[in-house]
Image (cartoon, rainbow, N blue to C red):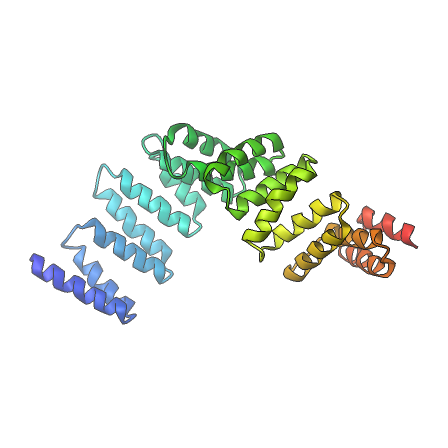
Length: 288
């Protein structure tokens, strides 16, 4: 097939795609790779399959590309990223482990995959390996954010604080980092320190329910019960599921403001969710 014929076919593909005729475009591209072993065509087919929801077909075409192109680290990295985009965590880990020695970015992606699987200790191992080998990689500070979150999940709060502070170098205005900082300070009972990051998170992302939840918890510990009431109320309005703990903390916030009827109502809501939740049971009995 001549270069001119290839160009014409690719123009026709572009035209079909602009008209949302994906199957027509796919038919031409699948015909092209039989004659033209061009990696860009493989990538285009995989991404087209992906956009149509045929993720496994896209994976297969990328595996074909890897098979015919040794050495193939960059193609395995592309496939790993493709699998991550489609939440194929185990498949991504398998393919990326094959290049983890030669390609530091794969360590970051494996760490991310394990984090999404809630395998936090494995995730921590890979993120740490990535940071050691990453040099000046743009992902280095992002890895610090993920490590901060992982250490928080593993109740390693001092370590979480260390990684969160490292990430502040580039991500000081990132709402999730500020939320992590607030959560860590809260867990370390450094409630005054938690004010600045939680307020920053509230400003950066006022529509995120979990930010309201932790703002309520922090202000409750600081005995600013009016603010705690406001943030807990906003959290409840934004959430489809609310725990007995939050209803109880809101009830106690009302109680501290001498709003007994409101307190009684929310203690009852807490016990409707969890009849055995002792903080609500004890507080309601004392109220009576």
